[in-house]
Length: 123
Image (cartoon, rainbow, N blue to C red):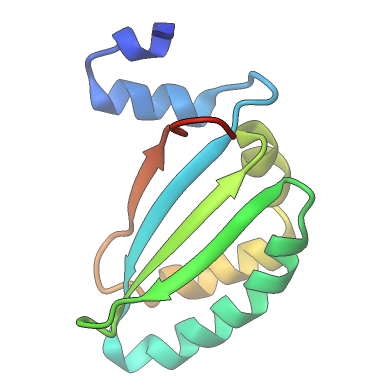
């Protein structure tokens, strides 16, 4: 069990995760986005632009996107990155990613839901 497992407060664990400076800490997460129906095509266009360069990042293990079969305005991004600090400090600030964030965040019908995951089993 790691020291982080002893932190009972989920908000504190999230804060610790996003402020970590330890190199080599992987990041796995699912991000659920609910998009305003009238902005869905704009969101999809921004998503199509960001996926190829994001997937080409050497830090990217995987980046998959699915659209709900029952709620067409709900999208789930499943992401795996080799290094959380590099993702946060190098990938996210890149112009292509910032353009995507600016466009996509303006299309949200409700706040995004980020669920960080701990890998289970061998990697």
